[in-house]
Image 1 (tube, one colour):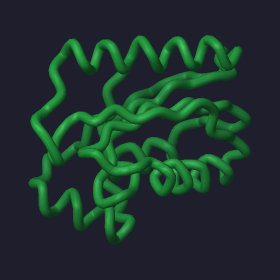
Image 2 (tube, one colour):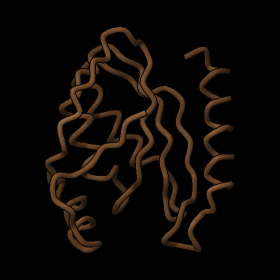
Image 3 (spheres, one colour):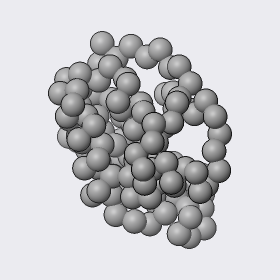
Image 4 (cartoon, one colour):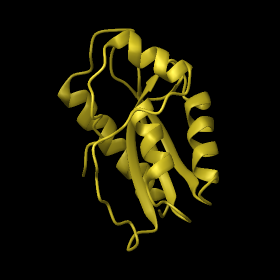
Length: 134
């Protein structure tokens, strides 16, 4: 498991505006080799109804050609159809596809999710991915 991290931390408003304007936020180098994998799992937040800018930078820059990418999306309570469509469009440019998708309501619109709630959401998502046969 690896964390996608920005090189420069930004405040709440800048992150939201970056998402609205499709900004590319530079991320720290990850040097990941997915050549031995057919399936990738990406957990990412939604900002302004789109995948967070660092996640979109990852989707654009990572070598994901031909991979199936399962998405666990954290939201403040909104639906995930639009963020999934945006991620799918980014992946299609690499001949990659979206697999299983799920959301976890993690904060902003309500109190933040507890560690137990996030763990449970992760277990349920893993079971869906396993049931899908990768």
